[in-house]
Picture 1 (cartoon, rainbow, N blue to C red):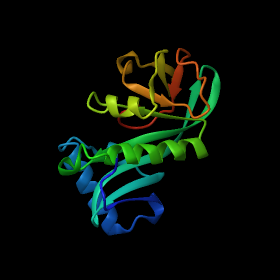
Picture 2: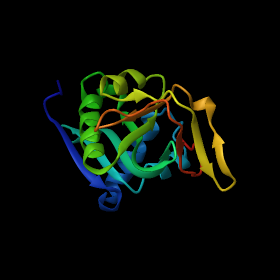
Picture 3: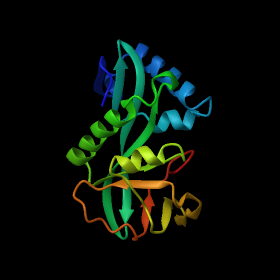
Picture 4: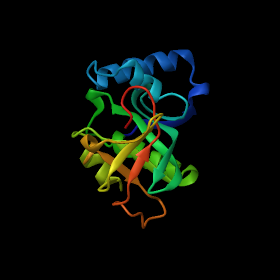
Amino acid sequence: MTPPGLSLRGRHTAHLPGGTRAALRELLDLVYEGDFSSDDWDHALGGLHTLAWLDGRLVGHAALVGRAFLLGDTPRRVGYLEAMGVHPAAQRRGIGRAILRRVNLQVARGYDLGALSSSDEGLALYRAGGWAVWRGPLGVMTPGGIVPTPEEAGGVLVYAPAGNLNLTLPLTCDFRGGDVW
């Protein structure tokens, strides 16, 4: 159940007004307790933002950004979930679940699958929302070739709208600055 007065709006990064961008960055710094780096901010830009407004105040966010992955040896278009968070004063009220439902629809409409790297605190929300922990080997495509990322085991989740995804195949993400997952 979502709280009365909650409004979800989708906007591409290019259509976020400057004031909304500033409020969003402030929200993410608060949600991530000062551990939201410039790389993290950069990773959240260039895609579709789901913004949660409660009584006219920005209280939640998720960004779905397109990335290129390999599933085994097959290239896949992936909607990668970035910068998901809810203001601490508005948590445990169904806002995160509402945002995730919207994200799941966006993945189903535009990507082969969704992927994310979860914090320990977020695992239960994502699992309840239909996301599954990846069980196969993980890696990153670098300029020098594919490099394994076993340290990410247990924290990478996927959402497969079409179902029947083999979660034991190798999953390889594209290279980027900062955290690759």
